[in-house]
Amino acid sequence: MLTACGGGGGSGGGNTAGGGGTPTPTPTTAGCALSARQSWVLGQLNEWYLFPTLFDASVNPANHATVQSYIDALVAPARAQNKDRYFTYITSIAEENAFYQSGATAGFGIRLGYDTSANRVFVIEAFEGANALAAGMDRASADPLTPFRYQSQAQRHCPADVVVWLDFRKGIYYAKGQRNYARGFSGSFVCRTEARQGGYRRSLLGLR
Image (cartoon, rainbow, N blue to C red; front, side):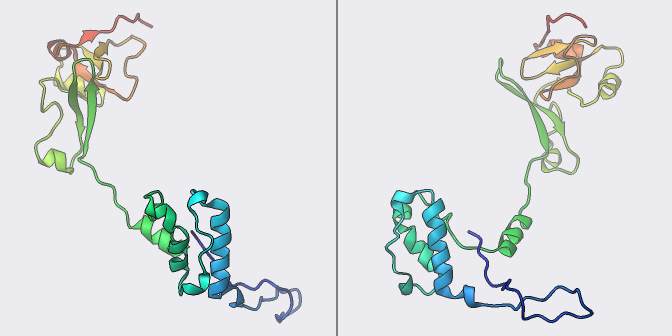
């Protein structure tokens, strides 16, 4: 719940220099009184609270020295039933920005492919500098099949063989010229001999 107060906004009371200037509004803190903020919170929760039948509008705001304490009392019935899991609280834009900027992304540094028909998982790609590669988890570490991101890489790996596009999710491969060759996010370029040895079959879809 984001709140703001002050700011005046009334006309007059400001001096202009040189004519045509914009008057500076006189700041005011009248709207920032605790009772005013509690009243604003009550109105917002009355209108937007997710569990209106578990909202205790009878709470006396005078018994609470802070806005957050008042909020906690208003939503106490919902929290008692483990429905409001402390996601109703007062915050500020600065606090929210600081929270999201403090996050980090974590991962092992590998891209996986899946052969659901045979219940197999393959390491399609291992990224340099990531934890998985440092631990010895490289492409095809669990299978003699070596997938590649680019066709040229696969061709260098097996210069005397034919490069095909293997769809790990479907468990089939496509030859160059077939409609689904080099398409989709669940496949990689591989050598045809390795694909056959791995038990994969060629797609029966016709040529383009």
